[in-house]
Image (cartoon, rainbow over all chains, first blue to last red; front, side, top):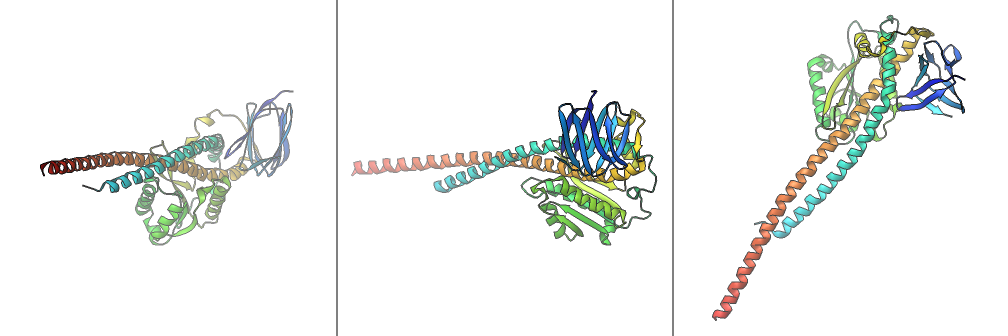
Amino acid sequence: MSTFKAQILTPEGSLFEGDVTGVQMPGVMGSFEVKANHAPIVSALEEGNVLVRKADGNLNYNISGGFVEVAKNKLTLLAEAVAKE
Amino acid sequence: MANLRDIRNRISTVNNTQQITKAMKMVAAAKLRRAQDRMVQTRPYATKIQDVVGRLVGSSSATNPIMRTADSVDNVVMIVVGSDRGLCGGFNNNLFKTVEKTIEKDLSSYNDSGNLALITIGKKATAYFKKRKYNVTESHPGFFDSIEYGKTSDVMTAVTGSFIDETYDEVYIAYNEFKSVIAQNRKVVKVLPIDKEQISDESDDASKDAIDYIFEPNSEEILARLLPLHLNMQLWRAILESNASEQGARMSAMDSATENAKELERELKLKYNQARQSAITTEISEIVSGAQALRDS
């Protein structure tokens, strides 16, 4: 499965950085998932659960809302408060 | 000639003080490193927000309440970021002087009519401005006991809310910018209303690679959600910079205090030895003359 780079940033530092196969996020227009080679997008996110799919297992995060930017096979998720589950 | 024991006591006092200032310097150095780390950790988040805001802000319409500009500026609020503790040289006083000068120069009419509100962060800022009868509407003493993003965003979100409901028409932040360990830049910046051109200028280099983004739901909505985050970030950065500057200022203040103590100790030791020597000389001459008198008799 093809992977891409993902990064979860908060004001207090970076929480996750690495290669993933997919990231599922709570967009304001409904939950959606980004896979490799996604078109460039900037989307606002609601409060909710973020699922990070990695080759060696999944990670769950709770975010307070924020936004995500995908460009050139790199995903950057910004949120003010993130808690790992 | 001063009493030998007096000098000895003074030497030990100076020595004790020196040990304290030395320890404080070391503590400040460790805290400074941590403060600098935090500043670095914030950077990726800050750059990204700056980036996207810069890209979107130009295309925004006037419907966004955070982008409003008042027809006449009636009420102004300034957030002053000081410190909780002293013993950091001119760190607080220099900033407060700058703030007072700025108020006198640009905002004196608001201050005279009571339309200038101050929000003070840190014990020292609170004490200083309350004592001088400024209109301090909100104070956060003990803010630096634990520096948390949550506390910062609470303050800024409240201010942004007051800006939207037109309680305030302009918002300033005054803080010490971290320039180097020994130097701080005193800064008073206007954060609201948002200066569109400045923001797009700052993010110019990064956003030049024009990627055609899909905006979901649309750029307006994203900007509306993003601007509060951007503003929170501004205050957060001011607080982290101020914290690092404070530790730097304390470090250099304590360093020069230690140097002074060393110099003082050296002088006192010299005096002590002189006194001791003359005491010995006197004693010898007394003994010699005593022995002389015995032999003569």
